[in-house]
Image (cartoon, rainbow over all chains, first blue to last red; front, side, top):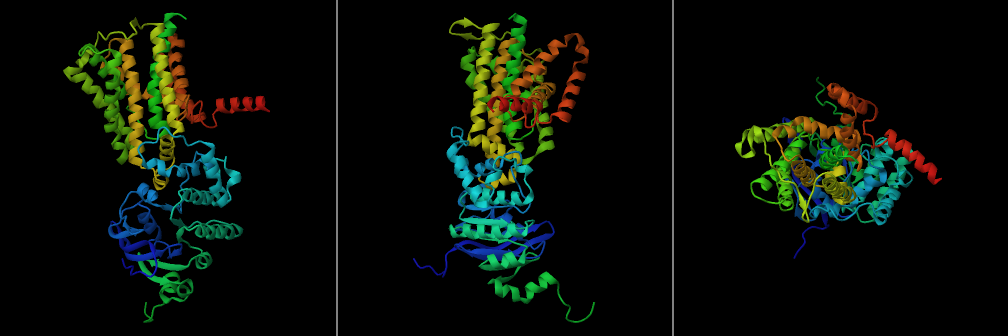
Length: 260
Length: 294
C-alpha cells in the first residue's frame, strides 16, 4: 500500500461546519494534527475554537463535515465513544465532580475501559492499585497534596490542573486542552508548560486552545487561527506572528478607503 | 417485643427497601423521581395478581415481580435521557398518577375495590406472620442494602455518581449517560418491586391509593431526611418517619404539619440529610471516632 501523506495524521478535520440557528459558528474548517505534535488553535473570542473542541470530543454534533481519527470516520459519535477511542479533553469552564475528592475525580476516569463493557457491577473502583494509579496523575500535575480535598473547595488554578489530570487518566492518544492556562499565575504557567511538554514526550498528541499568546507561541509546533468560524491562517508560530490577516483579526482592520 | 412494635418495624423495613431503590435513582444517579410509589404499586399488584389468580407462591412470583417492575422502570427511565431536573420531576409525577389510575379504573386490577385475599408467605412449610415475617423483611432489607453497597463500590456506581455530579464531564471520560441512567432506573425500580411484593403479602389487601403521589413524597422525604446518596440514609429515614407518627399518635391531626416542619428544618439546616456530608451526626461521630483513635 502506498502512503501518499508525508506524515501520519492523528486527527483530520475536513470541511467542518456548525450552525446554531442563525449563527454560523464554524464554516468549512479543515486542518490536520500530526502525530506527537502540539497544535495551537488560536482566534479572538467567538471564533469557534471551543465549538471545534466540542465537535471533536462529541459533545456537539457537526452540521456538516467529517472528522477522521486514526484513519477512522468518527464524525458525530457520542462523547463516551470518543473517549474510548482515545480522545481526552479538558473544559475551559471547569467541570469537576464537585462533591467527590480530588483523587476520586481522577479515579472516575480510570474506569474508562470498564464503563463500555456491559455494566461493571462486580469490579470495585476503590482499590489500592487504582488509588496509586490515580495519584500518579495527580503528581504529574502537582496536585498530590490536595488529594483528599473536595473538588469544589479548590481554587480555579487547581481545578484546571484537576481537569488535566482527569483527562490524562484516560491515557488518551489525543489530548484537547481548552485554555488550561487562563487564570493561572505566572509561576504556575511555566510549571504547567513543562508538564505539557512532558505529556507530549510520553507520545500524546496535543491540540490546545490558548489565549495567552506567549504561551501559545512557545508551546505550539504549528498554529491554526480561526476568526468568525473560518480558518484564516495555518503555519509555524513565527509565520503566524507575521501574518497580516491574523494581526487584523486580533487588532482590528484598518479601513483602506479612508471612509467611515 | 410486642406484636405492635413488630408490625411497625415490618412496615419500616418494607419502606426502607423501596427507599434504597429510590436512593439509587435520586441519591446516586441524581435523577429526580417523584413517582417511586408507582413502582412499589406495580410490584404489589403483580405479586397480588400472580398469587391470587395464577396460584403462584411468593417465591415463584418474586422473579416475575422484579422483572415486571424493572422493565416498566426501564420504560419510565427513558424520559430521563431527554428531560432534566424539574421537568423530570414533573414527568415522574405524571407516571405516578397514570399508574395509580390504571390500578383504579381497569377492572383487571380490581378497580376501586383493590385486590384482597392475598395469601401469607410460606417458607419451608412455615407460615410467616408476625416475628417470622419481620425476619423475612429484615433478610430482604439486608440483601437490598448489600446490593446498594456493592453498587456504590462498583464502577457502575461510580459511573452513576459522576453523572449526578457533572453529566458532560462524565460523558467525556467514557460514561454513556443513557446506559447508566437507565441502569439506575432498573435497579431502583426493581427494589421498589420487591418492596411492593412484601407490602402486598403483609397487608393481604391492596388498593390503588396505597401507591399514590403522597406515598412517593413519603419515600422521597425518607431519603432526604436520612441523607441522599448515603448507604444508611434510607433506613435511618424510614425508622424516623416510621416511628414518629406512632409516637405522636395523640397529635395525629398535626402529623402533616410536623412532616412539613421537619422537612423545612432539614432543608434549612441539614440539606445533605442526617447522614450526609457535613451533617451534624457525621461531624459529631467523626470527632468522637477520631478522639478514640488518637
